[in-house]
Image 1 (cartoon, rainbow over the protein chains, first blue to last red):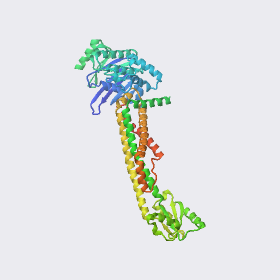
Image 2 (cartoon, rainbow over the protein chains, first blue to last red; image 1 turned 30 degrees about the horizontal axis):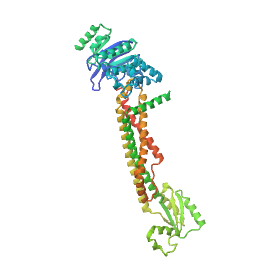
Image 3 (cartoon, helix red, strand yellow; image 1 turned 90 degrees about the vertical axis):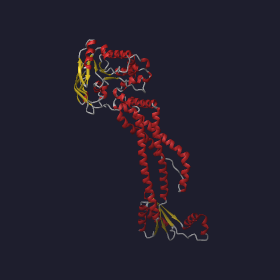
Image 4 (cartoon, each protein chain N blue to C red; image 1 turned 120 degrees about the horizontal axis):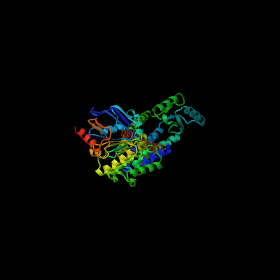
Length: 238
Length: 301
C-alpha cells in the first residue's frame, strides 16, 4: 500500500528532519510511528499526505509516486486518505454535520447520499445526536471523534493519525483507539504517530521507531505486549 | 450538475456571510465608503465638466458686417460658412438685436443709450463650433478658412480669452487624472486589504479544506462569490448613500455656486457612471479576494 524509498527531508535552514527513510506498509496493516519529540514523526506523516515535499526519495501510495504529483492532483490523493490531527482541525464555524460532510461534498456526491453517509459516520463515533452542534459546544474527546468520522466517511484506503490522543484523557484515548482498531478491522490501513508508549503497550501492533530523523527500530511483526513496548523504550533511552 | 455546483457555491458564500456578519459588514462598509469618495469626486468632476462645456459653448467666432444682408445673400453666406466641418451653427445678429444685448449688459446705466440710433452697432454673424473644435486651434482653423472669402473681412475670436480657457480646461483635466488616479489606487488598496483581513481570519478553515481533499477552485469559489456580493452591496450603498448626501447637503450649495458661473442645473452622476461604480465594487470584491486566497489555499506548505 505504501512504499517509501531513500526518503529525506531537510528544513530550509539545512537541518535534517528525516534522512534515509525506507519503509513498506502493507494493505490493512496498523503501524505506530513513535519516537521522541523532534524525531520526525509528524514530518513523515505530512510527507505522506503531500503536506510538504521531500528533499529526495520516493513515496508510492497505492502504486502512485506522490512525490511527483502536481498541486492540482494532490486533492485527489487526499480523498483516498483520511487524516486525523492532535488539534482535531475542525471548522469552528460549521456544524458537526457540515464538517463531516465536506470531504463528500468536494467529491460531488449527491445531497441525499451525503446526509446518509454523514449520519452513519457520526453514528459510528456515537455522536449522531449532535449533528447540528458546533465543535466548540462539545468536549475535546468528542471533537476528536468527529475528526475521525470526517476521516473515515469517505472509506479511505489509508488513515493517517498524528498524535490523535495527545490532548485526551485515558478513557477517551481508549475510545479513540477502539475506533481506529475497528476501521483497521474493516480493511483500512492505519498509520499512527504517537509518543505514548503506554498506548503501544496496551494495543500492540507493528512499531517503527524514529530518532533524529532516522528509523532506528522496526518491529515488523506484532510482538507480545511487553516485548514490543519494552524494546521500544530501550531504543528510545539508548 | 454545473447548476448544482453553482448553487452549492452560492449557498457556501451566503453561509460565510451569515456566519461572520461583522467581517462581512467591515468589508461592505469599506467598499461603500471608498466608492462613495469616488462618487463625490464624480459629482464634482461631472459638474465641472458641465461648466466647462457651458463655457465652451461661448467659444465662437464673430464676423462683423458693414450692412445686414438680404435673405438670398444670407443663405449664400450660410452655405459657405457651414461648408467648414468645424461649424455647428450660424446665427445672424441684426444691429437692433446687438443694441438690445448691449442695453441689457449695461443694466442700470442703459439710459446712456437713450437717443442713439438703432444702427449704432454693426450687424454680425455668430458662428458656433462643434464640441471638439471649441478651442484655440479650432477657432483659428475656421477663421483661416473664412478669411479666404473677401466678404468676411472683419473676423473676431477673442484669442486672449481662449488661451486662458484652454489652460483652465487642461488644468482641470490634469487635476481630474491625478486626483482620480490617486483615489482609485487608494480605493483598490483599502478594499483589497479589508478583504485580505477577512480571509486572514479564516485561514485555518481554508487550510482544513485543503487537507480533506478540496480542489483549489472548489475551496475558493464561495469566497470569491462572497467577495463579489460584498463588493456589489458596497457599490449599491455607495451610490445610494452618495445620492442621499448629494440631495440633502450638496445640491443647493452647488446650484448657488454654478448659477453664479452661468450654469443653472446641477447633475448627480450619469447612470452609466453609477452602474460603473457598482460593477467596480463587484470587480474589486473579486480581485481583492484572489491574492489572499492564493496565499492561504496552498496544497503544499
